[in-house]
Image 1 (cartoon, rainbow, N blue to C red):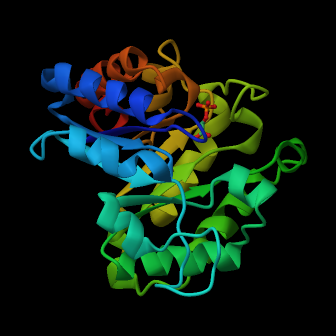
Image 2: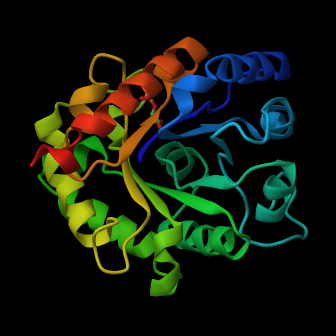
Image 3: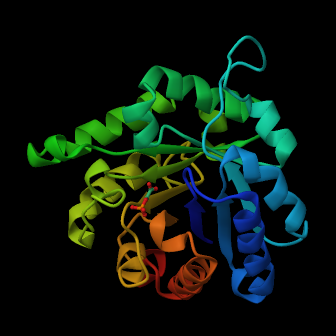
Length: 259
Ligand code: PGA
């Protein structure tokens, strides 16, 4: 099944979060056949959980959590706390956290392991900065980040993880939309080494960074791509639902069926 999800980053009041959830309920029929997920800010996780009927096929995530189960970590929340609030998924190692909040491959690996130990699905984000891409080093960079991020998990737990390839140069307002051929070699490497068809592979490999309704189908057609992880284009519920519909259609025309 094609994955399609959004992280709201540091956006949305409780009222805005509830309105988005209500929009998902109204679009219920569109959600069949895709694996949809929404990642609110911590403050809105419980409100979104309460607003969505338990049988609505939408996973709720958190954007970060600490690796320790409890303790003197002012300002942090634990994996258990986000699970208690209603999350079943947790984003780990997004480039904005690596850049602004000192996340390293070591803390990322601790968080991935803590998430699995708590019964959460880690959504491990990897991706190269522009300088690495300019020097042609993206394959090695991304492979290294992925293997270090997964390094604390035993092989039999790897299927509990989702990996998202998010090149730093493609993310956000200052990001540049990628062309499918620019991401294809990295997606191919991730699929071959870490993907669901690999030995002890993860559950899915997603692409994220400047995804929008015009490029989504082409990006989903890149071999090795099991879904999309979207920011800006999905913060409005109509935009998210449109991307869900595109992902549902791609299920029939996607790379696995192309050959
Ligand atoms: P964007 O964000 O779609 O707004 O570029 C992607 C991300 O940060 O995951």
